[in-house]
Image (tube, rainbow, N blue to C red; front, side):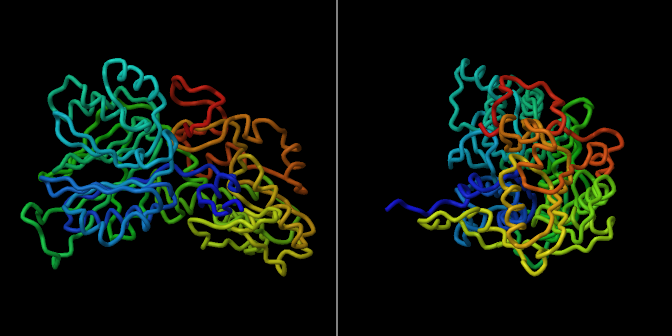
Length: 491
């Protein structure tokens, strides 16, 4: 009999129709429980990547590291954390956008060369990584992973600059694409953001618990933390003090925090999808609360695309905040007509006999008493291939809904992302290949409307045009090197 047990990641590939989160990074300097707080910071950012996790820590003289496949709580046991000694640490939780899904690509990556041991954790995607890797290999570099992040380590190692920070800056200027980084060199911690600022990186501070024992190398100075999202600060009791600016390096050492630019001012390209879907609603990203953006998306959508309906129902959890905004603006009641199963584990076992829409039903179940006989406004954040949306519409109709009006709180997705998001090829994006009416017919909805691009920009307060909207326009803010048009960004 065939083995019917499959991994949750395979479940996502088969039954999910979302852009997948990129990665989450975390760094902390000057705390006696650095690795444990890094663990908690990664736990708060688990939504950004579920394939692997890793932490590198240091006591200023020796570096400790551990990484594994799986979610944060699975990779790090109490025994593992006890072995991650020291007062500074960096961590990473990964969803692969460049490189295979395998332990060898789990981060942080650790390398030793004449400039010392260096560990790095990366959120983003280097669009010229293939070109750089080819050049490095031709000159003798031997790569240990298939991750684009390793390119940076080889560039640092081969830099003619003797000073580490000069070598780092020289290497960064050769990179193109998206990179927010935390980097550890034994007794120093660095945080880096690419010149366009595609991916977020926040700075926080915390007060040490004076009752904790301090090591001989640990001062009573400030504890600094860095994270992809501010929700990581909330869990550990850190105070958000601001964002690392695009093109900036922050160094934390015995002298405190020092910030300096490594690149000239460049037009910003903040990922607008962080506000549409990726980031947690309780985070502040790119200087704006995410929940405020998502409710504004829903309000604007209600003004642009009203529906003659009875209730507003979100697709949980991604459509909840926008549905709240749509409900408030339209005056239609908000109802949780779909209930999400939050306990789908790492594995599940399929039945031998096929069950229609099994994967969606495993995660979402309709509340028949709320839906029966009602005209539904179904709010979600996006449609990628359309396969899952079609199944959800069908489930709602089978629960007795009279009408289903689909409303999407962003514009049609017509182009792949190459800046750290796992997206299908353009041939797989339904909005790139079908008209609005064709998509509506495929979904089986009574009506379909997307938020306009102007509406999206207005909702995130993008008055200065600082957000990247390439997935909606096909206009990429950087040159793409050796990336075929019909290639998924997950290479």
